[in-house]
Length: 231
Image (cartoon, rainbow, N blue to C red; front, side, top):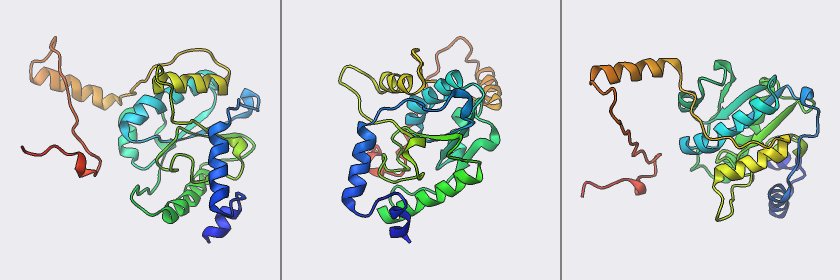
């Protein structure tokens, strides 16, 4: 099954997979279709939440400016978290949750790529009017796992930045090349209305208006080697 799936992408050996990812790293391309020709943009969640705020939010804003009539669909491993930060901009039915285990062996993760593509097709993916943007996602192992048959529909952001550039600046530059824009966009969180209401209630209940409130998250995403000890 796995050989058949990979051969469909012209990948018959480890060397073929490495050549493909090198090609993705080295290729910088602009949208080939007219703007009106693209109906759907599927974004693969960068993950974790910090990466999605830092990169994915910029990608969403650029698409809105370049292709305002285009439908945006966000694909991720935990849509509950994604909705916390993008509920105000992505329609409820346009979050695709997929099964994703970062600790799984590569074979299982490649099989997962096939199931993701099936989910995209269920959501209306077509080579004629759809593209996929991958901000070097963990889900696709930073470009190693193939997703769609034609690379012409696949736009991959190389997760590198010069020493004097932030990743936000780098993704802005890359997206300007893809969409033909020249505008710097900053990261943004699209908080759901109910969360604003909760925050209002929180501030009122604890008499915090006019005060600076700092919230810190010490989550380690299952990597307990990062956890702080009691000492």
